Length: 125
View (cartoon, helix red, strand yellow):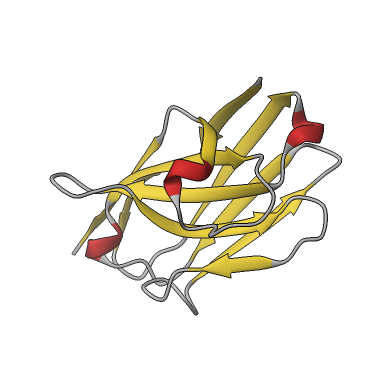
């Protein structure tokens, strides 16, 4: 199993920045992709970004492209989401998740086996 703990959420104003962190523990060698998802009230959980755990290649949703950046520190077993130029519509609970299955779409949340508890990001106008 893999345990995930997110941190870094909070209340900010539009245009501000936040950096989310996700610490992984347990069977981290089984990780293929680490992903960030978010879920706003009344909406489905959506893919934000993903990073190949060993190779470092990334994928990012069009809605946040140019504003959000995903990175990782394998030595610390941590993944980060740098969020710049935040907008009110970025308000959501942000989750990190582990995908252990080779191949397939990174934005398919059914491929993710382990999830963190989520961290709230609220952007005010």
